[in-house]
Image 1: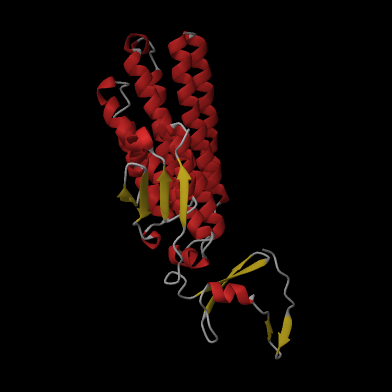
Image 2 (image 1 turned 45 degrees about the horizontal axis):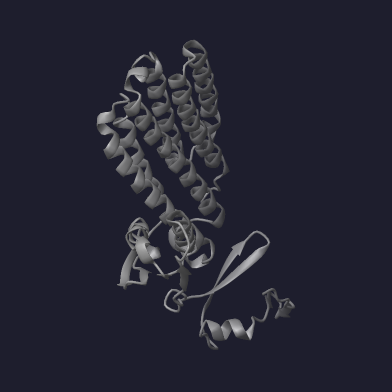
Length: 316
């Protein structure tokens, strides 16, 4: 609810503004308590100094009746990303096992109660122990291992890569949850030593990394199912190796916060896209078209990471 408050002079060097009584009571504050003030462009955000200790548990319930598992998964995931602490699914019926799998795919969520009609899961993770930079680094490490095992387009490593892609998805959702929590809590921003803008930038980078990982999985799946056709695509391993090097160079820029190098590296993306077009014309087959499609999505994802690198604010 929006309220308007008048700014009043206080002495010769300060100004004061009153805060709503309802907000004070809801946060169990009293006269003399310390408030933390976070300054952003054109706005100030107030929070109680010990807001983490005053946190109210957020609970939500959804019904599984008449819904497919994908719809249920979407609802649960949305509640998770929006930082609900307790999520209850009622009328689970025959979908109980699938619903439990959904919760198992969310970092920190533990099933606390289960009956024949409901499943209740609670967040057991302390968000203060998570940081966006650490989540991005963990996703990057997994992606590098996936890239290493996919350079030969061999189906032998496919199942292992699929499992690692699931872990990338889990960490990405954890990153989204962390970003939402930090965006709503200036205290977390200070704890993470970052800014609201950089949290949003990191969230976008995680989205690009998740899409990048999806393409690795799809390349191996397609190569496993169409091994003879893929084996005929000479030169595809070379461009894939170039994409891998490009990705590694971009992540180095991310960690070093080197904006000047980011601008220079952007030309590599255009060069790789042109090489993809050249190979597509050369082979002109269904297998070539599908592999090139995956390659281009990978390159576009890397370009997205580069652009986000350029948008990061300098840390003081």
